[in-house]
Image (cartoon, rainbow, N blue to C red; front, side):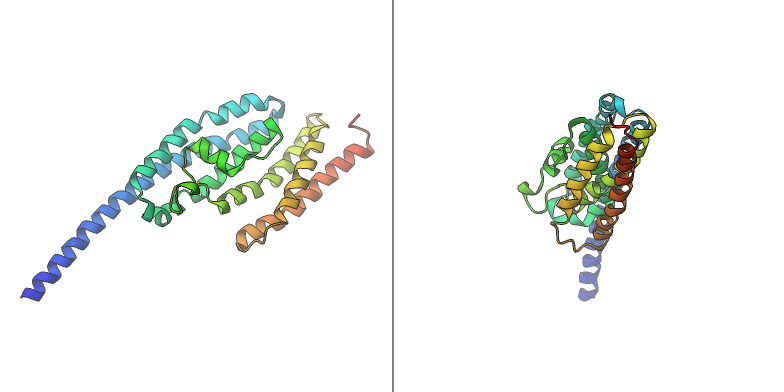
Length: 223
């Protein structure tokens, strides 16, 4: 009977632990659901850029208007998830964070002709980063590289669309940036299979961009 009582007490403690974990998981789900909604709003600015890329500053402001809410949602997550449980729940927002990196880097490059750094994105989202500890909320390097590796594909589309719109200067800017980005990725010894495949696909984007620039050149459209 004594052993039976001990077992019941043990499993009652499990019940409390499970209920607490379910409560945390539900709060994480609710927050990440709102993050996903905001990310879709960010992604909705991409078609606008392809249609009106010369209005990039106006479109950029529209995209950036989502960041106060994103910052708030990530702040809520940090209140719910303790550092020791960070990696247990990280997959809930991993894809959304990659998309945030992709869209913001794309728009930032069009505005400023430079790649947005990992640390700058963390600042926009109010994340402490790894300098605050290995289990701190951060833009993980893998997520950052995945987002950045998506840029050449979107830029190759913009390259074509800019020519259709009569802008023959932008493709040269795109070419220079994608060349530099491709060279930078070659410095990395990528072990992640998915990231490696993403990098391998960049060569097709480079070929597409080169084809557009070559066509502009032989037709003397860049004068």
